[in-house]
Length: 444
Image 1 (cartoon, one colour):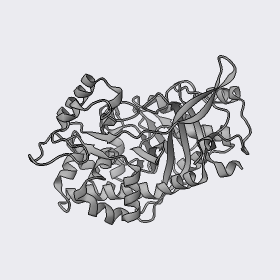
Image 2 (cartoon, one colour):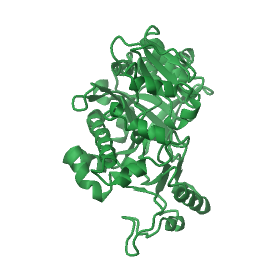
Image 3 (cartoon, helix red, strand yellow):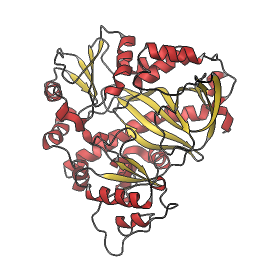
Image 4 (tube, one colour):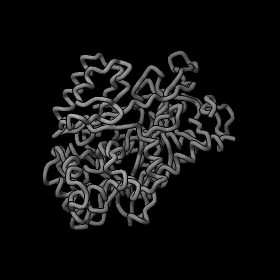
């Protein structure tokens, strides 16, 4: 895979004037709360990488099915009880009861978005989000750069064809409101409407898209009523109110040897091996002591407190808040060990162990993304500038079909985020380039 293939000049897409791009984004109110660098062409992917991304939707949907089953079986006593206990830490009892209700038992998210890093050894999956931002931004970028928006079609496809759709955006998620309003306008204001957490007019038969986090429920006055009406089948709601499906801890349990047979059976050998290749080695920061003769696998330590003594070169590790926390989304609640002074790293390790029973954290091998050449337009100088960049790819899969065995997760677009190579965490900062990804084969 050649480094330069990502920004080849051979393209069926014409160069777009950066000023036109920015003016369009400003007009659509997408450049007010978020700002980023602009490039003149989309981000090109080699055909084999595009195919791998498109096929990943099936694997991730099956992974969601498997974790949903594993949790249910743990609750029922068919699998170890500690699994459900672990996933329920820090959640209010009424929400735990709600997610176990028979009506939501098989409910899965309708939108799946992984964070994929490009490394020298291929893709690495570092996050899995079922309440993702970026849907409206990518829809707009597709329309600007590619002439049409598959994201719009994908989002619309997760709802009944004639249903009224209310997109509830909370204050906590307010920075994403403008992009969801853009999406609603494009899809038709007669059917799609963005509302806030105080909205009460949800007619029978309407579909609700939950663009608010479950940890924030005390600040969402309409939430309890929405959930109660969903239980009465007066409305439908997605993503379902199941915090268990929003925990990052599952990426650690994927590596758990005692669950290996379960994963192989529910994912199949091919999907299981693919997930192990994608997901960096991950551990749960559980402070419970090990037997005197045991070690945490692949780390060579008996007690997690020994992490605090790791040298900088040994700290190619990331600590993350798992879920159900205001720090569990975006770039919040993520600490890269090699970037921190030893004293600060030791404090994060200690804090993580102390908070295990209320807000568990995980430890993940740092995925070192490769560097590629990139270009962006500098509006201050009126020139195109070059930079070495690291890339995060966020493909969006929209789940169609109600029955678990019949549902399909279809790929409708990938958002590429390019940050300067001195940045360890890649996210939508103002210095990043945001682009829609397109197969290189389509550019020939």
